[in-house]
Picture (cartoon, rainbow, N blue to C red):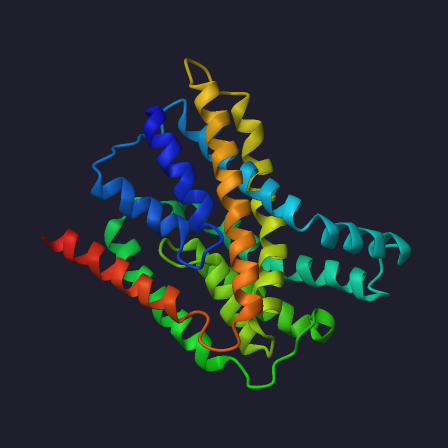
Length: 275
């Protein structure tokens, strides 16, 4: 991989991982349209992906550090049991992470076959756009404004939706926010739960791949890879800050701009594919 390609993909990862427009879908579209033939066998490829995810997870952890402090503090006070609001929130996040984790482990090889498929990414970017527009319709007129109304069933539904993000073009943050809206929460609460969910699952994905780094041999761009992780983290933090402020201020149709964008981006990629 070239250094310039790494930095571009780092910016794309940092922005699109949190914005509800699919980081994987954009990565596939950008690499294909620009003619970047990036080999998975390259010694740079695996370390690059791992560091990008570490950067993104670190940004989320930094932004929500007070939330995690309270969650873990509540868990300790409850001695691991769901005996208070913060401890229950911890276990809700665990439950919500199970569906995507299981599906990812069971179907890892089949899912990876889709990663370089422009047609799949283009189609599901458009599907993602439709899902976001539906999310605005699902939002209740009098939604709940705190996570105190979360239940085991609601957490499982949101977690099941997260599994859709394993398909290129489907946004993890997008489908989970829409699922949370459908469970009766407002935009800000839905986004907060979605981003809290992202921290452990993105971090876990990175941790699972870290042992493979010790088997890497040959020349790799260590400095460029590290810089890419920092860039991804910075843009992820900025994206989170922008989105949380945006969702707190919006009461209706907050997902509409992202939905129309995904429809346009997917249609453009589809037109390019058949041109």
